[in-house]
Image (cartoon, rainbow, N blue to C red; front, side):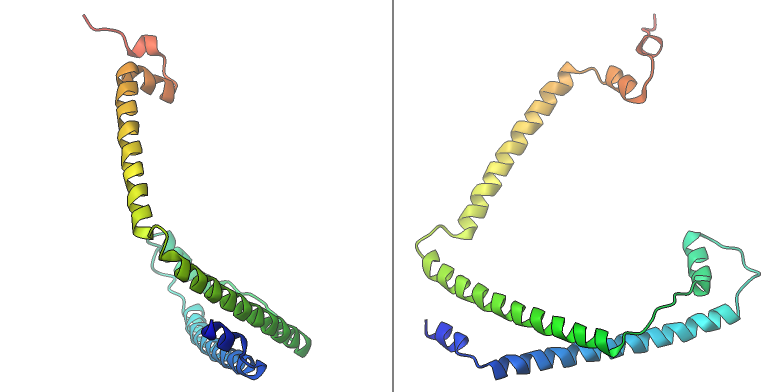
Length: 172
C-alpha cells in the first residue's frame, strides 16, 4: 500500500521527464533509421547506375534484389502542423500507457497478495497438461478405430476424384 501511495503521488514533472526521455529515445532511433536509409539509398543509386546486364537472373530473389533499385517512392515530408499533431498524440498515448502500467502494477500487487491462498500456476499447468495428454490419447484411439473402419484405398479415390471401380479391381 505504501508503494501504491508513493506511485500515485508521483508528480506530473516526473511523468514529463519520462515523456521527454522517451521522445529523445524515439528521436535518436529516427535519426539512426534515417542514416541507414541514406546509406541504402546511396548503395541503390550505385547499383542503378552500374547495372549488371550481362548476368542472367539465377532466381526470383536474385531478380528482385537486382531490379528493386529501380523502384522509387515519392513521399512528402511532414509539415509543422503534422509534427505538432504527432507530438500531441504521442504525449496522450504515453500518458495513457503510464496510467495503464500503474493500474497493472497495482492489480499485480493485489493478485500477489491473494495468490498465496490460491492454486499456483504450476499446478494449473500440470493439470492442463494431464488433461491434454488424456485427450490426445483418446483422439489417437478414435483415429485408429476410424482408420480400421475406413478403407484407405477408397478414401484416396474420393480425395483425388478417381473412379473406384476401375482402380480397385481385384487382380486374379
